[in-house]
Length: 250
Image (cartoon, rainbow, N blue to C red):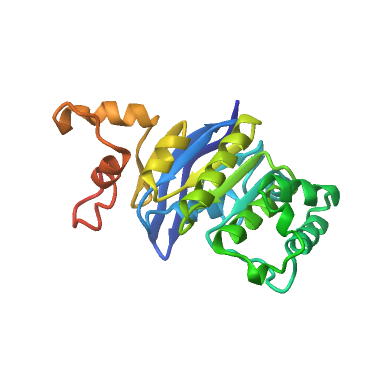
């Protein structure tokens, strides 16, 4: 069953198409990679799919809700982790989550469950201004999970983290997907996408230029690499960033 359905989704800014008629589906419990260089349209797509930005044309449904006409019904079904860690530094980790729990109208018991899920139980009473970057990121993820969303949008969740914390977050992502949560993931770490994602879409200048499993992507281009399977990083460079190379859209 598809949890995300996107049909010809388009967004223009002052006559320029940031997202250009993209279409794809994401199944329940799937970790879906949405990859592209900076400026390719990833964040604009997420903003549309999470109800923060109206599309210029096209349509999409997330968790069974239309992203425009049923935005209010959709929001309780989704969690969002952007690359900015907007937490209250003077508050403790637990108080940050208690505040969010009241906004989400969820039982306070979920606060301790979420802290345990991300490994912050022992730091629950500490003010977050003392937290490391990795601890802050885990708290942001805990906040997005408080209301047990059906779909979790993760925008570069392991960027700038040390390998230990990054591995813990990747393990959590797998655990959530195994429990049936749909994960929409953007990352610039191609090994991470290869390891986690069931399917990967490459985005270039607002268009999806390739969509397949990691293995399918590699097999499709193997002949152009002397019979050896390319890495996802090889394919990222090959398929995206045409505007950086001075080329035309593919």
